[in-house]
Length: 440
Image 1 (spheres, one colour):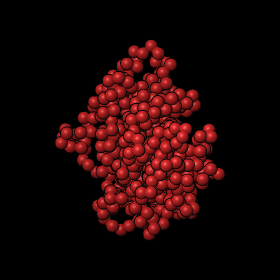
Image 2 (image 1 turned 90 degrees about the vertical axis):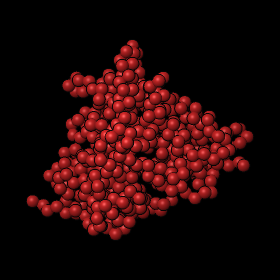
Image 3 (image 1 turned 30 degrees about the vertical axis):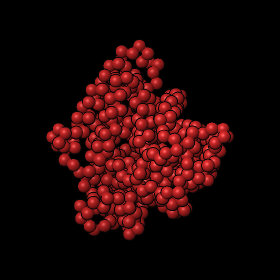
Image 4 (image 1 turned 180 degrees about the horizontal axis):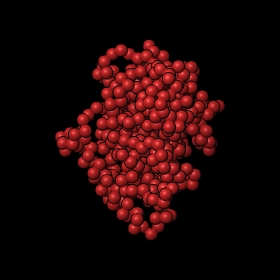
């Protein structure tokens, strides 16, 4: 029987490792990699002993392993999203949910959502102060939240308004609770979990009303929103999704697709401002009716500024061999997105923002991994790409982004996501025929 062999790691107390991770997890991971190589072992609260991988070959092996070899970890976002969230599910239940939720994010239905994205983007951009500096991140958050509430929840009226009010603070609090070892005590508003519970209970009541409205809608079968599709879908045994499953999956889709997409959009404008030649080329390309450079730019933003920098797995087989390491059943594994994306042997001159690197090559699924990979790759990846493409295309069509000589904004943790430290400060001007990019 093979002997367990884990990569080496820092021999410092768990509390110290946790403090370093909370202070700046990206810097901490880079520091450990310099000392121990592409694979190492850490010991952290909540997660326990974890093996961190940053070699593309080993990550590719991990992602192509089936659920009977490696699946989701016990400690994940399911702690805050609910027991029927895809983050919490594994094995057959995860496959069943994924099968039901895949159709809304492909083909004709995905194209139908583009009009919603453009409308929300135009409405938001019209409220922006012209020739004055402001933070782009809150604006992008409003766009992506509105898009998901309409396209995914099918919400409008009172439910739309109230969800816009309670979901942002609930998601921000939940993302922190998922990573910080706060006891799950519900002492009402006096405790973090108590406050989160209050948000969740109101959210469940609103979703229940949305379900009642949808079931009473004579046009339910022609609707494109994901809630309607959930109500109409059936598992292989003919059963419908329960209301609890629908509520957990709706908030999962919102959590996975709202803040992360908005933050990537904020990073996009932060990066483009500091690279005026690339910005000018992008605008010219779009004006000529091409989106090739836009697609490459989005890929490069996600490489240089991934908003989620790690993805988790847990060994479900008796053991898992990755390179020289033999990992035991139950072992938690982290594929480090941030370390792979900044590896000079994978992306030469990795610190340089250069969309051209993706004009001549497609992203390798073991090297470019902002959405994770394998059986647990983000189900809304295509939706997120569509949304970013439409928002940036609309912005650059109607407005001029002013270049900036300011230093790069720092990378700030918002719990799960990593955002621009100043919220992506931005200055724009409405475009006219006499005023194009680069003038003034």
